[in-house]
Amino acid sequence: MITMKTLAFLHVRMYIRASAAVALLWLSACTAGFQELNTNPTQVTNVDPLLMFSNMQLRTAGDWFEQQTYNYTAISCVVQHLSPKTAEFAAEMYRGMPNAQWEWWYAGRGIIGQPGIVKFVTDIIERAKKDPNDVNILSAARIWRAFIFHRITDLFGDVPYFQAGRGFYDRNFTPKYDTQEEIYRDMLKELREAVAAFDNTKRTLTTNDGVYRGDLTRWRRFGNSLRLRLAMRLTKVDPATARREAEEAIAAGVMQSNADMAWIDHANGARVQQSPTWQTLNQFDDYRLSETFVSLLDSTNDPRLRIINNEPTRPNRGLPNGITSVQRTNLGSAGLARVGTHLASPNRDSPSIFMTYAEVEFLMAEAAWRGWRTPRSAREHYEAGIRAAMTQYSICPNNPPIPTTAQIDAYIAHPRIAYNQANALEQIITQKWICTFLDGLEPYAEWRRTGFPRLRQLNPVGNVTGGQVPRRCQYPQSEQIFNPDGVNAALARLNINEYNVFLARVWWDRP
Picture (cartoon, rainbow, N blue to C red):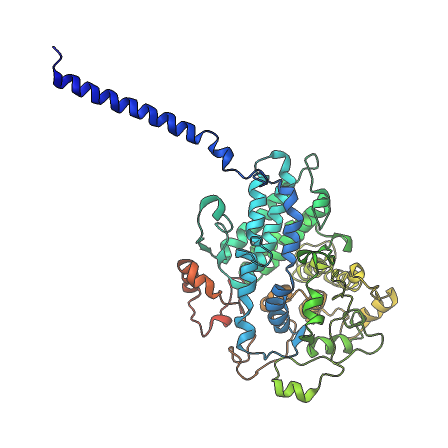
């Protein structure tokens, strides 16, 4: 028997069910086409990784702001390629080093409105992984990622690596700081695997590759050459691995001529397309060639000085590093050598060089000097490196006066240049220092590793290192704010405080 109470209960239950059904119908009507309505039809959601590649390469070269704040103002002055015309060689030169470049690598720049280079290369790798036909894009990006990160870790030591650039994918915006040893071992693995994975039957990079135009043979040589560079970093901290990796890289095939150099051209177009050298070195007029650099080239009759300084006869004098503003005023500015228009073109079209064939020959010269397996003797590689370095500026604008064979022969025969087994390592590294002019990071790493070239001792007033050359950069203040756990863990492993941060050694840098 159904009572009134039961009927009332059933009525309420039916009402709830009906209301729920109406609500579902209403929600269905409201959400129909919701995704379509809330999707921007003009926004690309699936970008071809190939289309991102040349932009990543251009951004790796940097723009004038990054080059000025860390490469020219700091690193190139530390290795005494350049000397600042106005700024004191003091605390601000070191403390200003990391901020702009860390931002450029990791965070991106608001002026250009694009993410950091680490995010760029991570995104290309993640997108290229999805299609087996993109294995060549993936392999080239893995090589480029190793190139980017070896420069970062060589400056700072422990840095975010394995988790870096992945915030868009895993929402982790405070990546762990990995040890430099872990980073180096993974970079060497990445280079081995990436070179082996290139496949001539798959899609290549074509014109979207600003360095090699999709030439996989040259990409393989670049990957092996970079592996050789990284292997030589380990000569003190892990000599067995250094030898194995170097010999394997050489056997796999490194750069064979200047045609294999890794460099990118620039144009006077959008800011990201412009070479950073003109505005930084000549338009702003903040730097002169270092007296250390000019004196060495001049005293050995080095014909490259006419390219670097643009002087048809005897070069101008260099500016000493580490002097005060009063001393600089007393010297006067007349006749001080500046970087010429071949390397700092007013048309903003000077190339950015990432790695040269000359450097590869010098790396093999050192390997041979150490008794490792190389194609030729240490002397032969050394002289081949000099010949390559003399002619590598043929890629520069404004018709640089490339040395003749006779001039190169005379230079190689100079008593201070002719190969001498007794001081061969110093000769090799000094020549590498010359051929990497304007790429401050590479000679800075080699100076820390070998102690060469012999830089002038500096002890300017107010120097935060007591006149010593700094051995690393301090982490930027932004990391203490946004990723304190990561940066504090890295500092704890170094066992340092803010007063000796610049003199702490990175993992591969040993006395």
